[in-house]
Image (tube, rainbow, N blue to C red):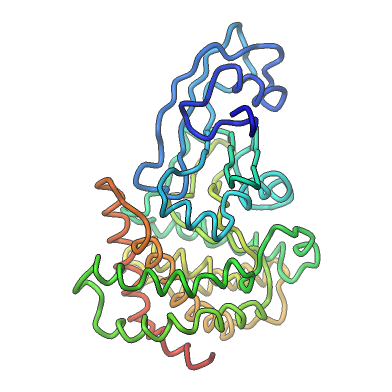
Length: 365
């Protein structure tokens, strides 16, 4: 820790470092952390880092200091580190909380400490603990009411940044055609075989040639999607990253490691194809896409008709399938919840691609 100034494993964390890291940001007012308890959280929900709830004990009464915080540290899984290094996930999340979160109209947890080491790629984040807010569950699936909340919040955020020059001030925020994003083509091709091996006959027969074809077109597609109206894209807009009913805040979103700028419909497709049951998506999909478009327009977006929105959504349903392919093909889900997550996510995504015949959009590229 001496070289970086921050821990990279939970074993490196000390009361002295927590006292220094929290400092004035948490209102310690001279209080010192004397001891702490670390509880792993996100097991089977987050795969690109180590997340812990830190319960804090102080040497004196500290009424304004938090009783607990969330600490995010690097993953030790080689597959996860390959992904985070390729796509700069750790750097992006640190920069988001450092520069962009306070400007964004989508509520996020308060950051108390953030650091990133360029040489090693390691990072540390201390964030506000959102408990006892209600956390979404991707395996169970969101209710339509909760999905509606997430869709409206997404549209409002993306309308805030829609084609805004200010978005390009953040030089760490990549576009869809950033070299790191274009690496998706090679990564997908490496993961496509392991993905099919993992799922076996769960992969619909009609999707096998789609995956074969898609693998050679991802770079071209990413280039084309960059030309779409540009806005903020969370990149991992899913139930496990949602918190509902936190005091005066009805909706808060965490995990900004994948944030990019580009076509906003990606977040919508990623949400609807992977986070509600197949039955709910089939029944409410048209309504929810119309709801997203309505709130874009209501918040100032112009020259983006519903037909264009629907076409972008359908394209992004196919593109969003890339992520479960890469996740299943490269990560090691070593717990029951993780396996259930991967199976449910992939099943819903593949079913959405088939239902919408989303592969037909490849002809546009």
